[in-house]
Length: 601
Image 1 (cartoon, one colour):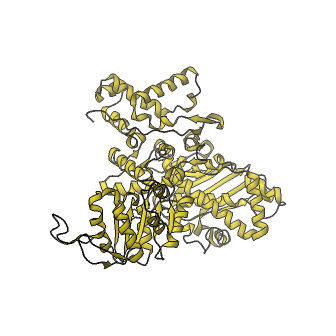
Image 2 (cartoon, one colour):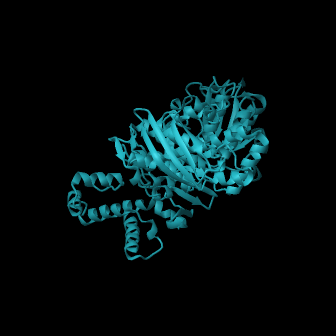
Image 3 (spheres, one colour):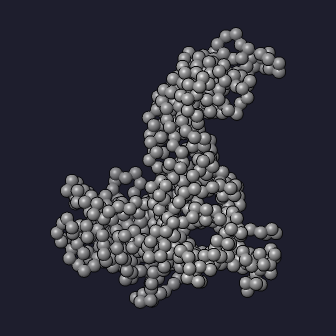
């Protein structure tokens, strides 16, 4: 029995034939390294996906109540689809984690995640796949299945399989990996009295009429987008945000607080109410304002944005309300103000708390009467403008301090929408990373493939005082500094002395949680500090001392050797290559792949 694997996903891949008796899954270290526990905000991350640690018994109770309330078929459908989408996400991660390994090792991320996520043990009996030829056959044996244990806890041994989530997972993982719909079916199950569970997977069309009953649990007609379609899309396209320019792209996010803001925007958009966006600088107030305008009945009319803080105080009134010829020295012709330009549409007033007292009074009149008066004019003009305002200061406190008119505040505060800072919605960060990487790859003509594991960790651990705007700037910086066809690392992102204050935890040997130093994420900013840190860890490993030797990797050791060689050769790459017994091109390639930069290269 042979294991055959071939796919165009890895460059230069060839058909490989492996003896199944000698097949062993690769070490879990690369997957364990993707798992992070963040105690400061109560989140668990697996790569760029937020995870949840729950009690197995609570899952069993949920299954039982779903079966009793909805019936066996409906409960099975929900659990199968839940597993299906988890499989799709893990298949996407597999391509990133093992992009440089064999295709077999890339595919068995799925069975290994079966173990890592606490579901049970998965052993390969037979695995054959050829993406180009459209062939797939998989056969696995499962033991210690949590779904079976919990099902049997509440229900007697029956004649139907019960590993619903994991059948969905195997089908979703294989479908995403193959780019064609793959269906796994459970032919033996512990809940049916068998000693272990056995699953078989093939392309849907190869199952014939047998597939119909199982397939209906994975593709409900009520879904906007069926799993089959998700599986046929490239990983980068699933959940991909709008990547247009900043003036047309909508907000990006998936967090509950983001969804709450978007819900408020959608509710108020069809009305004519004045909206006040509140939140720290850089959270995306203007992006949400533009989205509100696009969803309103005024979408075909102008959207005019004004940053009140960027206009000198002596010019703010003429900018907002316009100026008549001869109103002051240098006013050689009449000019429309922002209100008149936005007539029929929407005017967005950012940083409205900085308006002068005189401008505040005139703005109040516009909101009350719908009339403006140009500077130096003798009569009023009627305008039909919807005003959306935004501020990063507490206007109530400004009112108490006498710096903002109370009557204007109440006119603006008709429908306040507060946007939470990015540090309180970290699950939006991975989507923002993908969005801005796509945007700046296109803008700057670059071909960056993604982010290293260390870069993802750093992005998720940083507090982002500048919020979304800072994320955008950092990603653009990374796109510029990183090498084409490579991944962006922390040394390309955090170059301005950013400070990391959050403690995070990672999985060490024997599955134990150990604290990790957030500063280590950006240690490459100071090469000497990074070399010293890794050097200490290598010494500890060799001597069997220290608590951090569990975390040293071959990649770090090689990076240390490269840096030490360049240092000893006084920056001469050819000489450094000779010290290591490799060619200069090999040296340059290894340095670039690890983001090691030196003068002359």
